[in-house]
Image 1 (cartoon, rainbow, N blue to C red):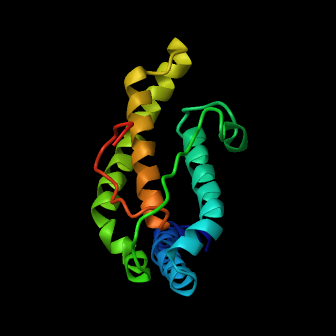
Image 2 (cartoon, one colour):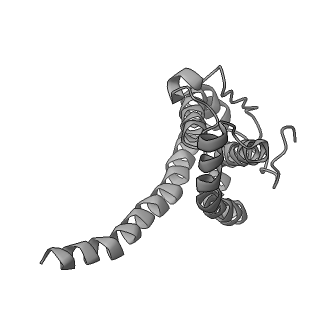
Length: 173
């Protein structure tokens, strides 16, 4: 009956979602590697780079909104409260772009650990924000650094830069 369907969805839905995310994490760099191979890196970054930057900026703005760093919608936040600065360039081939998911495994593991920490911390911060009408400063700094780290990994993942992202929450690296 309905209980069985709920149990199956409860068990398999995370597996299906995880598989779709894994396919995206692997397939996007392979697609970009094929584009780099066909166009060459300078032409790829000149033609495809601006669109990829817009997607990355929207992703970071969406995450900023979801993690309560800004009240503005993602479209309003771009350029105002959220600014993504990409230093394109480098000299790498299509093969490096294809193996990017493997190179980013340490970042993925650490960022996943911090994402789990967010699930524990966000309710506490929401409580403070609602009751005291203040957002905890330490949480704001932690979240801001986390999103910086994600933005650097994202730029490397979509082949906008050849600089391997540092393991840092810092503003300038």
